[in-house]
Length: 102
Image 1 (cartoon, rainbow, N blue to C red):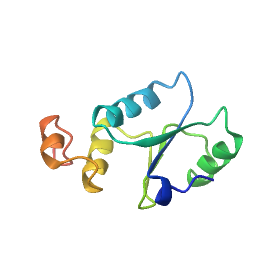
Image 2: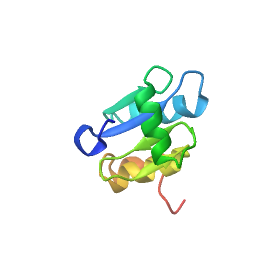
Image 3: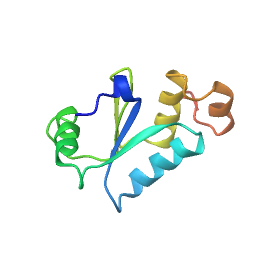
């Protein structure tokens, strides 16, 4: 299992998943470095992802270095988490309307 505390953000995804592509685009748009793990190509990663999801396969599942997890997050929720963990500045988050209060 990949450890997010050592490797940074981990995005568990699978091909043809629109939500996965959207979440990866948010991360890419802000230049956030992350590990993208295709669960269809890595059975061990698929099992690890399901462990954090209570046995359910749900993508994208994003694991953060602090151990927190977002499952199928909205852009707003992902942006708020990036800001909270200081991967994105508050000004950038405010600019695109990703603050938790909006």
